[in-house]
Amino acid sequence: SWWDKEQGPLRHSGKRGTILEILLALRFFIYQYGLVYHLNITKQYNQSVLVYGFSWVVILVMLLVMKTVSVGRRRFSAEFQLVFRLIKGLIFITFISILIILTAIAHMTVLDVFVCILAFMPTGWGLLLIAQAIKPVVETVGLWGSVKALARGYEILMGLLLFTPIAFLAWFPFVSEFQTRMLFNQAFSRGLQISRILGGHKKDRATRNKE
Image (cartoon, rainbow, N blue to C red; front, side, top):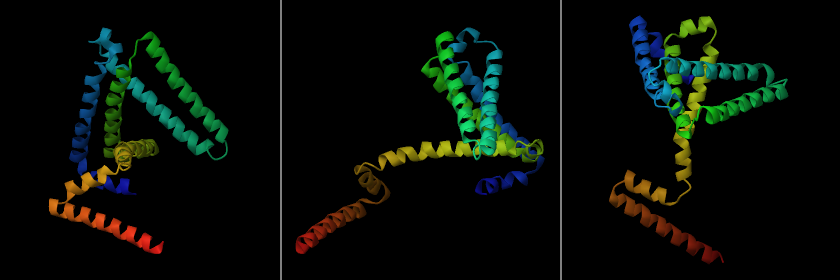
């Protein structure tokens, strides 16, 4: 419901707002266009437009796979869990096989995989923005469920990227001291440290008295 309310201004922005939103989303496609020609496997086809077209074929295949998994989850996850897991396993094995073939034949490198992620992730976000701008059309076609699934995946991914470093840094005790020095002034930080020290001494005295 929060995600739907976030798109409220798009519904009342009119045709000009919708066109402007679509034009702004095209910047992600330009970003993709610039990156796909820096791949190691596309150096010999540096000036060919087919490279950019093939990148769109890859994106459409990825979206089709996501749609297949989403449909399979709705139809098979409750009654036919084994079938659904077999489908996901086959998709995973196919993906790994394609990576191995590209590495062996087309000399695809790890840097190429990283560049592909940098190119395709913003493209998916651009498609998501366009789908949100033309929501009535997408709902008429019947693809709004897929758009919501794609948006959910992006939200989960961004949450992992943001909270994983925070959770990792929370394990270290010096981070709280550093955070206190950054958030508060020097006098308050010293007072807070002194209160912690005194609190520790009081706890030690209390345990000694109990003993």
